[in-house]
Image (tube, rainbow, N blue to C red):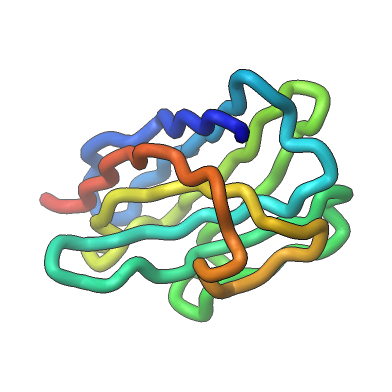
Length: 124
C-alpha cells in the first residue's frame, strides 16, 4: 500500500490560487493513474481531476475545467493540483487517491490508497 499525504490547502479569497501537493511515502506511485476528489460538509465526495501515469490523459470535472490543472512528477512521487480563479463553491476537503489501474477514472470506486485530505476554504 502507498501512503498519501496532501498539503498546500488553506484559506484564500475568491479569485485567488492554491497549489495542492500529494506526496507518496513507503512506495512509489508505480504505473497507476492518480486522481483528486473533494467533499464538502454534508455532501458526497465528488470527482475533481485525474491523470494517467504518463500524463498523456487528463480528465476534469465540468465545474473546474479551465480553472484547475492536474500534473505529476513521477521522479518525485508527487501529484499536483493547481487551482486558479477559486470560487466559494470550491470550499471542501480535497483528497488525492491512487487508481487501481493505469487508466484514469472519474469514479471513486476505481481508487484505493486515499490520503487524509487537506482543507481548502474560499471566502471573503
